[in-house]
Amino acid sequence: MQQFTQTIQVEAQGRRLYDITPQVISWANEQGLNTGLLTLYIQHTSASLLINENYDGDVLVDMEAFFNRLVPDGDALFIHTVEGPDDMPAHVRTALTQTSLSIPLIDGSISLGQWQGLFLFEHRHMPATRRIIMHLIGE
Amino acid sequence: MQQFTQTIQVEAQGRRLYDITPQVISWANEQGLNTGLLTLYIQHTSASLLINENYDGDVLVDMEAFFNRLVPDGDALFIHTVEGPDDMPAHVRTALTQTSLSIPLIDGSISLGQWQGLFLFEHRHMPATRRIIMHLIGE
Amino acid sequence: MQQFTQTIQVEAQGRRLYDITPQVISWANEQGLNTGLLTLYIQHTSASLLINENYDGDVLVDMEAFFNRLVPDGDALFIHTVEGPDDMPAHVRTALTQTSLSIPLIDGSISLGQWQGLFLFEHRHMPATRRIIMHLIGE
Image (cartoon, rainbow over all chains, first blue to last red; front, side, top):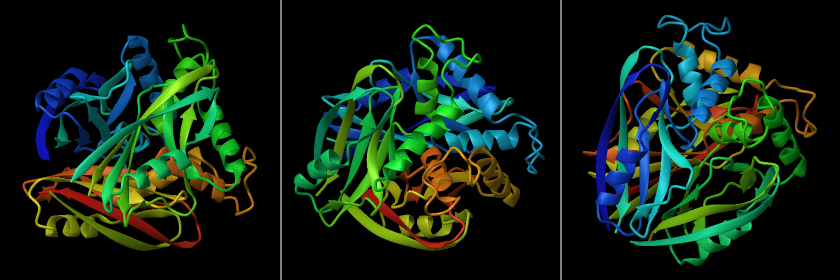
């Protein structure tokens, strides 16, 4: 049994979904394991991970529109406003989505479904450097 | 240390929660491990995984009612409507719940709480074949 | 490759976020592994896990306020009301957050980001004993 780790750094340029699928697949599949478990972990509380449809770009637009309406910027409910009107909404959006994701590796490939893409979901409007840790265990 | 994988196929007959607890428990416990980690991964973006109360069927009805109200079919917000009024809501409901779940195995049994059941949460109204990958590592 | 397991018991005194970061970090880092994967699993359907900002206590207040508004106690939508007006909202809030979380361990430390704290999110108003299982694998 072996383990591998790697960090993906994304230079996010504002609130939207960033496709990290190619980077994750190529790294996971290149470690030479047959069977294993890949875990992604994002080290932030204002950006998260999401598995979403990877085919029609409109899905990404609609996903953002839904979260924007559900957790509006500048909501008078929030008292933590020192970092701006999108700061507390970013924490809530992170809570409603994923900080870690685990995907089995079978027959040498990670088991993404046909229409599944892996995305960094940036929730702040300003640019930010985001770090995602990958951990792979198997043989 | 050993690994095992298996696929559960569910023939979903429309939007609701499908109990997969017995299949998961029996497979995980039958591999003969004492300590380990079980991961479930669903290969779709319109169906998800949920751990929910397994005792009172009304909880499943209410859970569906809540998501139905939070993410209404045919919402004018959405532009991705080509696959029907329940397509984009299905993606959003998937984003708000789980695509992967990991559960420790201790003393030869997976560590589900007394009231926890494992469910496939189908979000489309039409029938669909859904695949859940199980990965177990331990010894 | 080695595995370790441990249970954290929290005596929750009503609905709010409880910081479990110090307990988790000290246990995970004390097992003497260099590289591994830590998984947390909560054995309940009315309490969940959340990674949230650990610096400003106002974030915890706002997070609770958001979920309280999104899933109001005593909502007439719900038919499962036998255990009180906060019972079904507790199940929904659990569904919207996390039951399991996995965090890589690298260079002997778990890879929490600088502003990330680990929280038990209690969703019932009455006191409850909550159990979180920790599983660590690595070498």
